[in-house]
Image 1 (cartoon, one colour):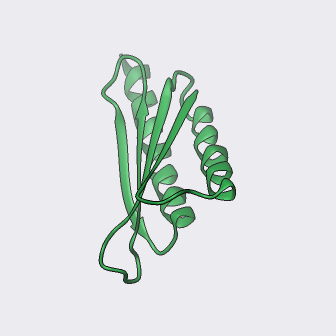
Image 2: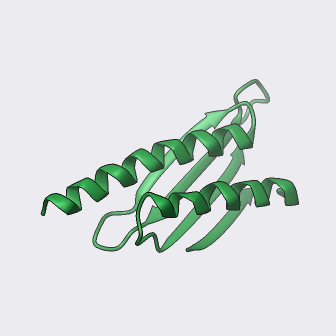
Length: 100
């Protein structure tokens, strides 16, 4: 799976990038045909709690892209919640394909 990480108006740390790659790579176990993942990270203004936004777009063959956008107190937490939501979407898609 090809992974592309984009951080808007800040530089993501090496630890954050490796955490994201590790979490997103685990989505392969829910669906065999995941082509790519595009992750966009940005800080939502104003500077308050829960101002870190993660947007993950997963491309799967023979389907519309799956997307999850979450806002949390840290990027790690936002990515974690996004991956959980995408795992559910991938399982649902896999069941739908099996029924056909």
